[in-house]
Amino acid sequence: FISPSTILLEHLMESITAKELMTTEVVVVNPSMSTKELSELFTEKMISGAPVVDEDGNLLGVVSLSDLARNNLLNLGSDSGKWTLDYHLQGWDNKMNQEDLEGMHLEVEGDVKVEDIMTPMVFTAPQDLPLTELARAMSSGQVHRLIITDNKKMLGIVTSMDILKAIGKSD
Image (cartoon, rainbow, N blue to C red):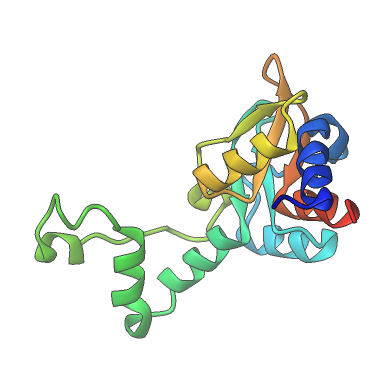
């Protein structure tokens, strides 16, 4: 038995598009920004991630609280070293032996910059993509934000929270 509310929710998820969900005033960061400045910006704006753009507005990557957390764990010392190594090298363990893996670590001279910790892959979506497809893309890519673009121009951003809010309003 499929309830009327389930049918309504499915219709809603097919009819709402990225254009209706996206935030158009996107907070962006520069790759040369320090992680201290980034942390302060995230706190001030109450966001968990942002696109990284160059001076011309070209997308270079995405940086998030997860990137900050991973960077801080790398610098905590030996107590977190084994867990951090395991986390960052997932998938490499079947390609290299444990001794070689243990020799790998991130070394950054001086202040850590956004470009040192950002994810250089950007997940984008067109503005006409329905909510169901947005959710599917986020789930498949294991990401919490999609940059909405048109001809490589950033129009906005849709986060997992935007999707939850839309579903919550469906009642």
